[in-house]
Amino acid sequence: MKSIFILGAGRLQIPAIRKAKEKGLFVYVLDYDPEAPGIRYADKFLEISTIDREAVYKAALEYQPDHIITSTSDMPVRTVSWVCEKLGKQTDISYEGAVCATDKISMMKRMRECGVPVPEFYEIRDPDEFLVTAARMPARFILKPADNAASRGVILIDKEKSPDLEELYRYCIQYSRSGEAIAEEFMEGPEVSVESFTVNGEPHIITITDKIVTELPFFVELGHTEPSRLTPVQQEDIRRTADAAVRAIGMRNGPTHTEIKVTPAGARLVEIAARAGGDFITSRLVPLSTGVDMTECSFAALLGEEVHCRGKFDRGAAIRFIQGEKGILKAVEGVEAARSMPGVQETEIYMKTGDRIRRPENSSDRIGHVIATGKNADEAAFNAEAALAQIRVIVG
Image 1 (cartoon, one colour):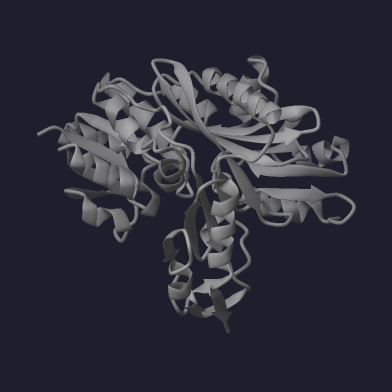
Image 2 (spheres, one colour):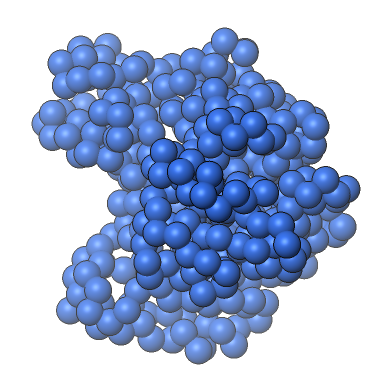
């Protein structure tokens, strides 16, 4: 029996773990968390951090997996590429490309070199450099950790309303593994993500997803709707930008998740991930709205099978995330009522009574989600929001 290392055993990695079992592979899952929910679906658990490349390499030498992959997490993409290159295995993306797809400074530099439209940006290596850069930036700009995900540490800086710039810098940099950050021009306009799959270096765009985020100054994603409701002209511009970004990082095979802002000057890249989209976009929304199983596509490419990434139908699918006010979670009411609403496919609560919650500053602050479908995007969004309205988060 052939075997596979899957880096990550969280909730969002479960579809990949189950698909690997369906394909007849012996599945090792690697995660730092011995309580990760995906462990129960695997054959063997290895308690190893997905970003500890030396430990993953050592385990690969010991267990000799035929394949090594990750699913919806950014930094493990680097680990997979690095380990595969050391072992002489084929990779979906080179280690150099993986760094470009996981380090925002490297990413923006590569995009600019390749002519992909991006915001104005500056590399930040220390507090003094930040203050100098802040002085030259417009009144409002974005500060991000160079190498994190899920909106951790990403914040809008408004120099007129936020006089303590050093405090905001400290907030951001605590989430940076490298100690570096990036300051970017604040881009006005709707934000989307582009779900695509690359086969032998050729990107295939599957769908465009409209995004809902929190009120400023944070940028936590609170909902996604497919297909996009932007105009055909805007969507064509988005497709061109996403295609160019995928090619710029040198993707060979596999899924990509590209975030784009549609500004008055046209589509501009926010960032690109060389992996499947999280937030249940890839695992739930794309199959519900297009009929394309991107997890199946990933394994088909991995195992040398024909990849089928052309849409089979055109329906609507939407997810809305549940949030609450700051406090101790006492109860979440109305879940069963939400589940019985028209079009609802799934309602899930992540947190438990007694957990401390807050208004979302990053994705881990969300309490749960509802997923709904409809004959089009408008109906799916309506159904998801109607179900969300049934749910009441009680805090004390």
